[in-house]
Length: 308
Image 1: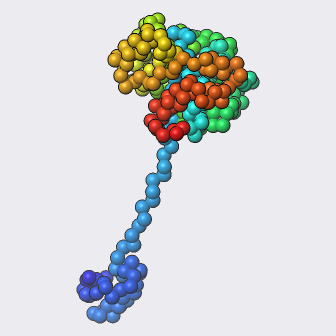
Image 2: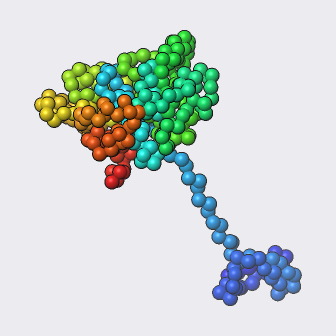
């Protein structure tokens, strides 16, 4: 290695192998002019700081179909509860005026989504913890007022729900939104907020027609919001004893392929559990319904090892 005196520019040869710590700052004396100067033989290696881990984006999933009686609320509640059991932090949002999610979980909310949207109460006073890692933002009759509020807005009415919920997202891994039957301003708001859709379809002809109409409606929404996508189609009330249900299931599979989830088998325990204010995992953890909803959790999370 060659070092140069900064005063007289005389060059000096130096054997690096004889220096214990090349990165240390040393004093060197020039043999030409006799002056002392500082020299560092090697630049210290800087350790690169590891980038801060980013929190995964919260997944907002809407459970929706314009037709009623297909198991939307049952699916929304047991999807949210199953994700919480799997270790995720979950917010369940009920946008139905019937407020059945609260009933199914056996709780009586002191406030609802309405107070959050109108700004009457802060999120801390509206969101209630109903199970470990599971929080509820309840629905109810007061949501009818939110629909009128949306209708009265001259601009941006479709973003009302999005503006209320997005500030809460960072606290959760999943936000699961249950919707009411039909097609109203609040349902449109859900579609402008969620990024994924899970559609329960009972295995009957009328539900297939409802699914077809719902997909057309989603296509209309996607003209203005590309982020929302129908990711999961969940057959419900599957009864192998009835030939028609198997035929309809085969038809759905041919049309929708990879978006199709394993069906939820008809199970009386699913209809009994709400009367006790329990999820299917609490009421009858070993029944077909609990097994099928666990399979749905594995599908949604992409983790086939959950609950095994």
